[in-house]
Image (cartoon, rainbow, N blue to C red; front, side, top):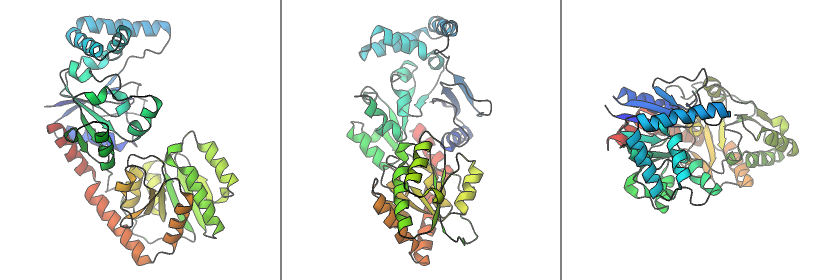
Length: 391
């Protein structure tokens, strides 16, 4: 039985189905999964696998001292040889004594486990831990999901330089991400593209026909600048000027709420826009089943599960050309892909869609639904992860 360690910042929530379905799929095929997290799980966060939580080193002096003392005992009596090797490998990479020692202390909750694979769920989590798998005599894997490949390196020069020199197998969400990794010096054979997947039995088209008196538009997204929601609002303001009646619902929470509410006010479209916060998958499905168009006009986007769900539900999707979205939706075949940061183009595309003959709309929906069932189902994703580890 292969034993796989998955490293994440926290226990994945119930909405993070990509991690949960992956864990269940591996277990169903005889793998043992151990989850390492840095933040204690909430009371309602349960996973059917072993969860190991990092000691908390950021508390008061007393609690911090106890955590460090326990880590020192582990170094001396539980994993002395692996600890020595990790220190030597980090030192060889040019890290100073203090940095090597701090890294040794911080990763004791991982290093003592016997694993076949150590898989970092995000690229950012692997930074500073590039030698951990080698010290544990395990193979190393890293997933890049979008922001970690495109945004995180902007904050620090040469962010992944050490990582890209290591013997690592990479999982990415799209062909474009693979091309971008190769441009950074990673070899083709190190990279495996495995797209996100959804429960196609849960998200399936509404059998009843819509009879909306006005166009119903939906977005499900974290209220973050990278989602391009301000550009979306600007486009919708143009639709108002063209006398196109619509209702726009945004599902999601985030730091940009106040800014977006004010933007809608300044654009004069507050009466057309509803911010309804975070909702359950069941509620999201209900909104999708009563909507006509799904918008994801992101500036940066790894792939986006919500767009797959919307296609599965029979919505016509209009998305930007940000990273994986152009592979998620096939332009003019299963939806529309347009340049990002161009509200006028977005408005024109929606207007074009409003007047599109029903036959063409139905053809877009049909192809999108069929493609999601074939290419973005959980069973296919699980098989691809099995191949990822077995090869």
